[in-house]
Amino acid sequence: MMKKGIKKILYLAVAGLMMAAPLNAAQKSNELICIDPGHQLKGNPGLEEVAPGSSKKKPKVSSGTRGVATKKYEYQLTLEVGLKLRKALQDKGYKVFMVRETHDVNISNKERAIKTNNAGCTLYIRLHADGINNSSTQGATVLTSSPKNPYTKNVQKSSDKFSRDILSEYVKATGAKNRGVSYRDDLTGTNWSKVTNTLIEFGFMSNPEEDRKMSTPEYQEKMVNGMVNGIEKYLREK
Image (cartoon, rainbow, N blue to C red):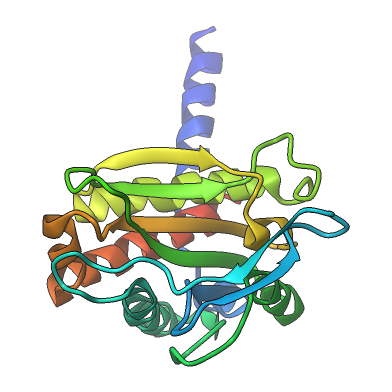
């Protein structure tokens, strides 16, 4: 019995080491990470289907929220961080596809998802920041579809894990409050995606302290490191 117990412990230890093993260069070069810096310079109030075959429609895309302290727009922050995330991933050997690289674009949420589907992405991460009428609220959230969503059946479980990995590593790196996973079935970009995906809300631009922090190079480095760690955690364990 003791020998069996020792064998089991050794097996679990080896399995754990294998799961934790970093990806090699060849593995990384096979992964295409798609980054979607949320929003754009001008919103597009035109309507589009919230999901394939759905009769429900939503505005195509908005310009997002704005920092109460920095006066920076969400679309500016998301691209700022998105470009840094691209560089960090490329420096590690990953291939990266950017949905947008400038502010003056007109790409709807549906079109963003389709772009990443067509690009053959391994993972699709959508970058956003929160804003509400309460200046004391702060923290990071990830949004993903629920198990009941009929449009995301093929990627719901993987997207749930990816979302949790991103959030856990992001709050670990930044010290941001963990506001948990929000299950949403009304997000156009999520419903049209055929790729493992998540939407991260970095923090609240309506909170002066968090708004200022998210625009500092030091904190942005932590944000990026957290997301990179979350991506690598998911890829190691998938």
